[in-house]
Length: 183
Image (tube, rainbow, N blue to C red; front, side, top):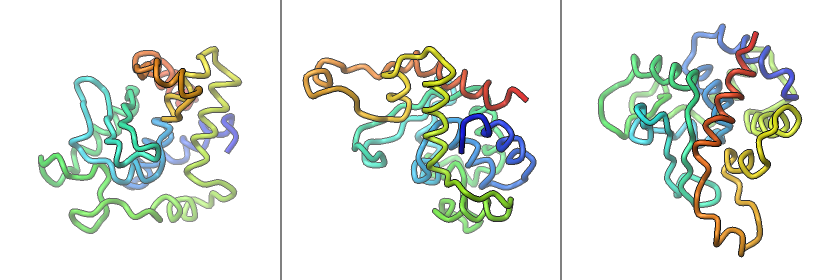
């Protein structure tokens, strides 16, 4: 979906009262992959630090990824917490209607079909985010790529770059949230 269309889509999405709708908005806000969101547990969330830490074994590149959470992402988590099944850290952020199970990998597709939205897939919102970063902001390329958990640079550059630019990425994610919810 072109980034210019994301705010209107999210407006339509927010009108839906469904766990999958909140999860998809969270996916868009965090520029995460579907499996990262559907498999997310409360143990990965630091509400105080406003950081979602995804273990390397759940990431495509096999490396831990910290995601700074925007104010709206925190609001979604606070809404989700009201439906939390227990205080166990293994409880899913966005559970299925089947107790103890995560949302199905088809939940987003089914939601889009019910909404009459076609021509794009949830993973494409990562492209929307990246295009917006490149076209509408002055955030450095490396920061935008780090937000997507992409490994950039040659092996020498990677060997010397040990940080993850978390605070710079926090600014990017907050700006993305403001863009999405500007209307």
